Image 1 (cartoon, one colour):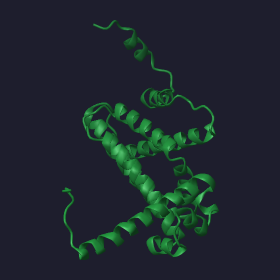
Image 2 (cartoon, helix red, strand yellow):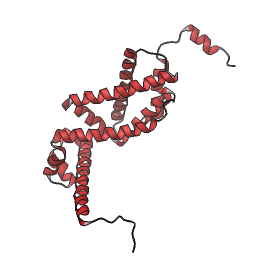
Image 3 (cartoon, one colour):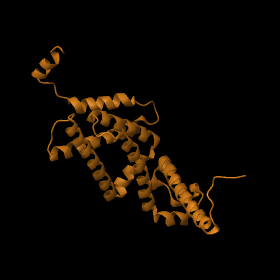
Image 4 (tube, one colour):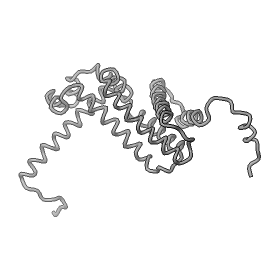
Length: 226
């Protein structure tokens, strides 16, 4: 029977087979580490438990990741890459309203947290055990948020700001992610809050603030619309 598979010689096949096996081993170790982190925390589990769960020898973990810390960094990096890929899909329209983009991003982040419950625990462990890595991750997110704010200013959905305020507002927006993480943790397996209602309430706070509107604002809102 004819097939569409490309022909390959024995030397090429011998090179590809070990590569595929090595890649599979690496993926199995990462999956096992993520499962252990979800259940008991990465630093509460042992290398032996991770490799036993992955069905590989301990030496494979050291070969692929160098150390336990190397595995933690790789694991967190893979989760962040997954999150960034989800968000990048939403970042294709630079002309979109800032608040629409922020809403879509926050809802995507909530979906990501529910799909990856170990992320919060791993982020806390990296903050404690790998503070420099954590600071670099924060700096990367701040840069992304600053770019989003500047795009919002250019679009006209945000007021003009100087560089100092842009950076400050980026930090405030990053704080919203920590709020979402705490919300997910506080649910503790119980019925969750409505994600869209939570995000919309937060965006109303960002858009309008908590202060009572000035008298002229009230008057403007009472004027009949043409």
